[in-house]
Image (cartoon, rainbow, N blue to C red):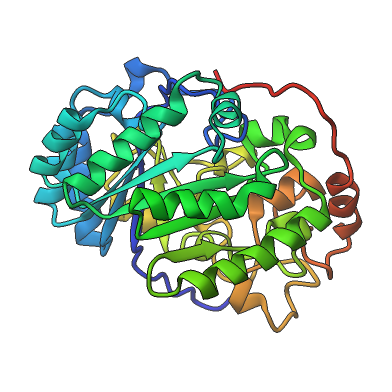
Length: 358
């Protein structure tokens, strides 16, 4: 067995809480949300940030749930600043106003990412499961720009809003964003529960791809537009999170450290906690992080594929959820013996009510 070189991670996703006022049916949080009583303290997070910086991490994404649900958020932001980490707040904008945002800026916040559900108010509020969310997002985006903080608009795309890619990008431009992230739904957790209600058609996806390319040409130099083809309609899988245990780590509200946000969907993995282990020890030695490093674990066709060091077999969680085995090739790959299952699942589309994240 060849020795595996473990690179230093670059990013840390800090899930500060699973509390959130919205009920987005594609939420990446697990179905079993962690309770408030189990959340790490601000002092815990400050220690984790320092350990992350020593490990090589350069940026921390403050996420949730809704991070503003925590009253000690300014203290947590200051902890990231003291660790010399670039901090990005990922927020729904609900529960955060201009005054609170200014306190975060004073504490050292570097960047804000605001999610929007659609360019049309009624549709956006319906998708979010929260009446009035659309206007709150617009208001907070204006506050971000007023404070001089860089603004990214995140748009999660699915069947209900995929035909609005153009107006959503135009909205991001009007709000003063420097970047817009068009993120197609990834079918884990709540999104998996709502897959048939969220799944777009291939024709819708292809049209959206064409629109994105046109928008990039039109607005080059004014806004960065990040977008990728959704997994279920791709020919090859993406190198999920840059490869398992290679570039980033995720800390849950209670302190469990995961290679990716959906890793708990794979049974049998052992996740270490920052309350009991140093972050460097978790990164280098924990069973979960080492489970799918290297190539020895791979089955065919990945093991002998020339792309194995590029996409690392794709997403382990998706392999388990669709093929039933996390060591199999990601079934979105056209070379996977289970690819037909992806084609079958993508064809299942229902106009069913959302099961909201609660």
